Amino acid sequence: MALVTISDIRAAADRIEGAAVRTPLLRFDDALWLKPESLQPVGAFKIRGAYNALARLPEDVRARGVVAYSSGNHAQAVAYAAKLFGVPAAIVVPDTTPRVKVDATLSHGAEVVQVAMAQRESRAAELVAERGATLIPPFDHPDVIAGQGTVGLEVVAGLPDVAEVLVPVSGGGLISGVAAAVKALSPATRVIGVEPELAGDAAESLRVGRLVRWPADERARTVADGLRAEPSELTFEHMRAYVDDIVTVSEEQIGAAVGVLARRARLVVEPSGAVTVAAHLARPSAGPTVAVLSGGNVDPEVFARYL
Picture (cartoon, rainbow, N blue to C red):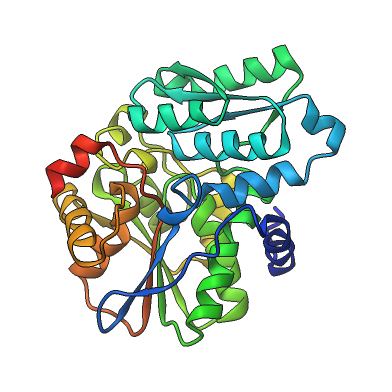
């Protein structure tokens, strides 16, 4: 199985320039820097992969429209990228998706279809067949992974002596791209994935060396709604090749990290993005560390509770 290369990631960086923000590294404490992807135009890193994937489509194919399935952030990213290219987009999301993410997707002019979580992929496939559109998957595609990998390019450029990079894990597109970039540019840097304990399928899979599937209703228990997906064969191969470890954090640790980031860093971060800081606060640092904050699209009631 061909893995994404540093050349793929550098080419993606050129494509997304102007569409995605080059987010800063913010000093949090003596050992930790934050990479706030919550500052992207859609409030999450997903714009990088979505825009790169749309940009790679032939113009006549792209004009027929795109379809995506998502837990929320990829939905907004594809809707936003489609708006920039002037093409139609239909997005399938779980019926449990926070209203703030649904409304944001609609605001970019996309059609939103809500279904049970387990039916997202099948309904998206039906829409592709019905409309002749192109599927832009949330993580299981080399162009998406390459786009997300631009986060890793920026991390190493901003902190060349980084010892450890903490990355949220769900379907694995973000950590696949980040790890591929970081290991190519700084092989000694450790790349550590972070998952909720209630959706720790990737951690278990990496530990046993094969994909382990958890039922969707089990993964849906975590408040980190953006981390409820499961890795694909493609993303798992990237993890096996480039990721040093995956750790898990509790729901209590996640909620506490959301509050800490708001009070100490003045950042609005959703639970899915705060898992990396939760992990940092729970374990000693190996040296200069970067925590990727994957998004900030949090339900206001959830955010208020953690404050």
